[in-house]
Image 1 (cartoon, one colour):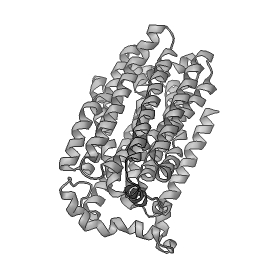
Image 2 (cartoon, rainbow, N blue to C red):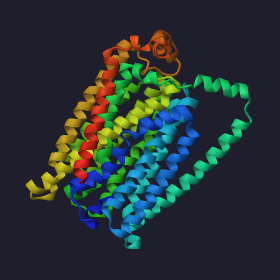
Image 3 (cartoon, helix red, strand yellow):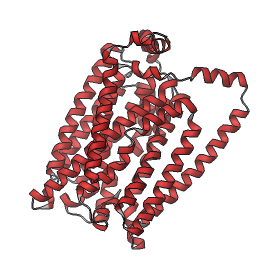
Image 4 (cartoon, rainbow, N blue to C red):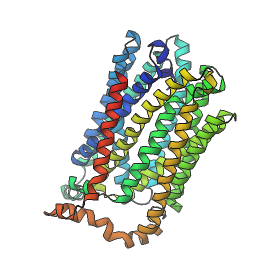
Length: 450
């Protein structure tokens, strides 16, 4: 993300406009993951992955071209296309893994997927400025990114070809049984569990905080601790280090011991602590960034595997799509709020060392809210779900037995011809709130982009 830091200088834009530029990806992904999840549940992952990787590659091509024309609007258009693909591709990946590894092995496989993503982010953040300096042009980093996206598109074509060969070698009876098992009923969304919607709230708060902080952490380190661009970029990339090493271990830990809700509480707590360290102490920024990276390692794996455990596989794509949508809605809103606070801090505070005081105070309060939500999830799982999310692979069988009727109830309700009789007002409230937040995020995005 460091190359984007130069956009405020190269394109002569404000921090608020930069926040809108960053939120252009999350803005389109406030709606797209839901539509993408529905598409995946209806038509399968092959079609979804092909469309997603194509949009990612095309979007990055347009972004790279915009660096030659110095066009802010063209760059935003490219970011939007990139966002259209990037949000869906993660839903595709997690839906595949959630369907193939529903029980034991789920956490470790998703952990490998998250680790791979973090390695790419770490290398991207650390190499953007050196690549730009090597070629004497900030757009060189974007062209390097385009090459990686083109390679990803090629790998996806190989995957689709392999899946088609497997399908040709599978009997029609088996294929028919799989289609019946994974047939999606959109009414299921109305009957999603309360604990699922709590995880969605956590995705909005904690996920929005993660993404927004990753957009500004390099500049924060540069201004508050007085280092140059290259050192700031590499220091900021430390925030991606712990997920690389910790997430694979956590995947094994979750499969063996469970404790997902415990780790979620710890994730929110470490996020809040890291914001305090980076914003209000003179401790070495690497300490705060490492603490932040622990939060980034613990949270996503706990949330994604929890959703995969409580939702049926035939609605998993939609469930994960809503999860991604809530995260990107939070990120869009927080990005723009942070941009406004940055501009206000730059005007009110004379020294750059303190120009992030407002931003870090906001992040600290945001982290406290997410900690409260995580604590609520912990208690609901403990007393209403027989600690299903805290259970390991062996104990989960007993927990499933206790809550089996509750888990199967939504599918029975959704399949009934009089399904509306089973839907209470509270079943619609989460969908209404999510819709309102989507509207707010798009209004803020449109106003700040103008």
